[in-house]
Length: 104
Image 1 (cartoon, rainbow, N blue to C red):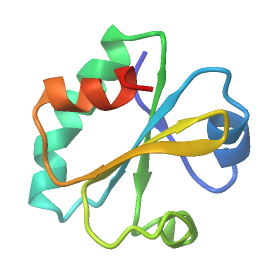
Image 2 (spheres, rainbow, N blue to C red):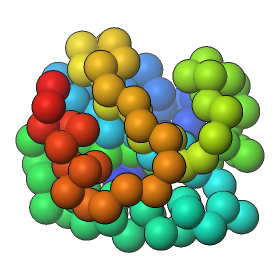
Image 3 (cartoon, helix red, strand yellow):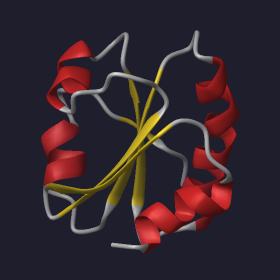
């Protein structure tokens, strides 16, 4: 499965009401480090069915970015049972991104 495009219309259903942990990638098209992380996030979405992966474009969804106090991108946020349980800012290798989700 590929990463879900998360917006304010589907956020509650796809993220807050999810029965699985959700890895959210806050990104923007002009962000170089975001472009480095994007293929890794897509790989994780395809390889792991035990959690969901969503991408939130901060330029298209400023309300969601503000809700999570996103000051720098890329920011990765893990949500479980509707609560933020992990957070990391900056480009990271795939193993570290996976460890964020598996650590919950």
